[in-house]
Length: 175
Image (cartoon, rainbow, N blue to C red; front, side):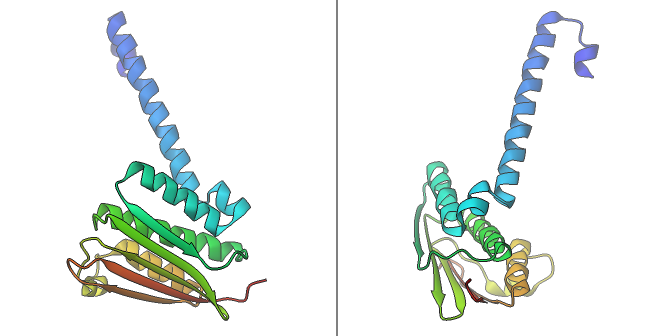
C-alpha cells in the first residue's frame, strides 16, 4: 500500500528492498518454527541426532557449553521422540533466555522399562513455587503436561542463583 502511494522512484526502490527483507525474514522464521516443531532430522534419524544438531546450532549462536550424553540408540515411538524433543528445546530456550546459563547438561538414558532425561544448567535459577501460581512458568507447565501425557513423571528443582535441574521418567517398552 505504501508502495502504491509513493511517487518518488528512489523511495519506491527503498520500499521494495525493505519488502524483500521482510519477506525473507518471514520465510526464515517460518522455516525455523516448522523445523523446531517436527524437524526432518527427528523424523528420519531420531531424537539423538536431532538434539545434537540443535545443540550445535545453539552453541554457534550463544556463548554456552552443552554436554549431552545418550545412553541408548533405539528409536522411540514418534510421539515420544517429538514430545521429548520439544520439551528439551523449551528447556534450552528457558536456560538461555531467562536463566542466562553458560553451561547446560543433558543425559538421556534407558533404565529397565523407562527412559530417563536429566537436564541441568548453571543459570540464575528461580523460585520453584512459582510453578504453582497461575500465569507463571507457562513453558514449564507445558513441558510438565507433555511428560505427564506420556504417563511420565516430571521432577523440577531450582533455587534463585543455583541453576535448574529437571528429571523426566517416562515408562516405555522399546521395540
